[in-house]
Image (tube, rainbow, N blue to C red):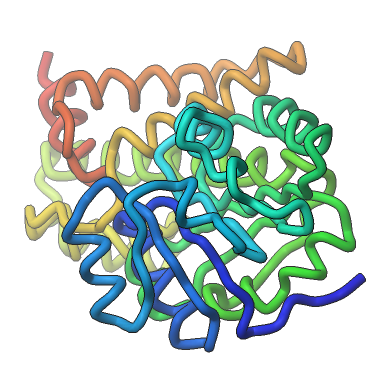
Length: 298
């Protein structure tokens, strides 16, 4: 097992809110980074930070040692890798492909079998921490795949993350990411419903948050979201509502595929999807408060 050099060529496909700062941190760590994104501004920003940019996934992946996908869902990942302008058209067989997006774990395993049959190694390594931690390279990484493959790309993870967990076989990283966001999303709903209810009774919401944060009710939303984005009505956490809804639905679908019934999981998945439909495209995930507040008064 050979660990890749920190001067290796890395193609980053997807230069959005997470992919772009991750690509920039790879540049800072010494990697030769070439990125692809359909958005010209994103490509130009990477070039301004010392990277290179390409106009297609195919060209970005040419001669790359590692290909990273950071895209909205598994279907887009599949197209970026195997489509008409997919990365593997010019990708050398010794390369390792890392899907750092949030994708459905069983779909990831199927994609992995296809890539393996074509001679490629594949690791799923989704991240948690949001845009802020992508910028300061302190993301939590959940890596699934063959042990040697995960070990070989450790320098990549060191450059973009603060902590890497080996979760098991291929697909396990994506399963863990979906389950993490279910727990996060359920906690967000509970916290927001609590402060809506408290306000209706006559409690001061700011005081409620202070109490929650030194009591057993504290969670990521009470600590990082309520005062910062909800009570301030700035809604700028940097994580989209539709992505949270997608990840929780992945967790709900996984439970069905494994013939398990969890009523709360189904209810939370439905709730986030209803909020997405109500609030529309582009809403920050903290804006589910507005949906909950509106629907509590029926």
